Length: 273
Image 1 (cartoon, rainbow, N blue to C red):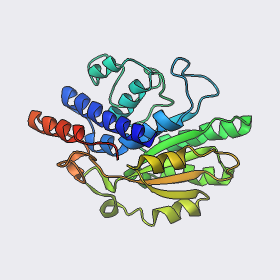
Image 2 (image 1 turned 120 degrees about the vertical axis):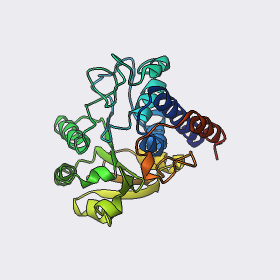
Image 3 (image 1 turned 90 degrees about the vertical axis):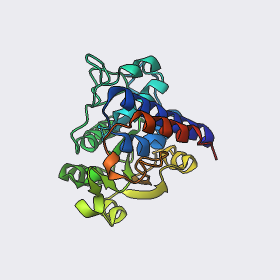
């Protein structure tokens, strides 16, 4: 299974870069850092049926870092929510695959995101509903680390801890970079794990590119957990493409034809461990 997740993560990277290159816009750095997390979620953890996207018993996933739609749409298509051929329409006029995910356009999108600071609050609300209904679905939310500078994130975190939302898992894509600069130069987040614990969460820190670690933590049963879980997934912005890795300038941007060819060659060279 870990090898399959690694292959899927690399496939998501190739698809996202192809979509961005074709469309002439996008957010490749965050797409690439989140790809392995999304692969683990959709191909090893989440309980869902793409033929019945609104099944009340489904697990819920919220993409709080909603600007990284290249990776999200690739994962949704790979999971069967819509045809992979539709990825070719990314950001085209009248396409369902617009720059921010929209639940009225696409099955599998739980809530509209994009403006940062919204996804975790919505996920907390979904988890509270599940708690009230004594439902057994789990709620997962993927947030960027720069996004944690939004006050609404910590209001939601405080309430989730207060409610003891054991059905909720927040995953932080901790690539240490946001638009223009490192997070610690913009508005320092550390000690990040201690902050989540202070808000009443259990915290696990893992390598966000290690499929075995991702599956071990995310696939664990939510019951009888009495606290929400924060998974700080340490990642590399632009993972897998040498000239993008750890470069804040690739938060958004479009590779040239030569850069695109180099990126695909480097990604095609990645092999499962």
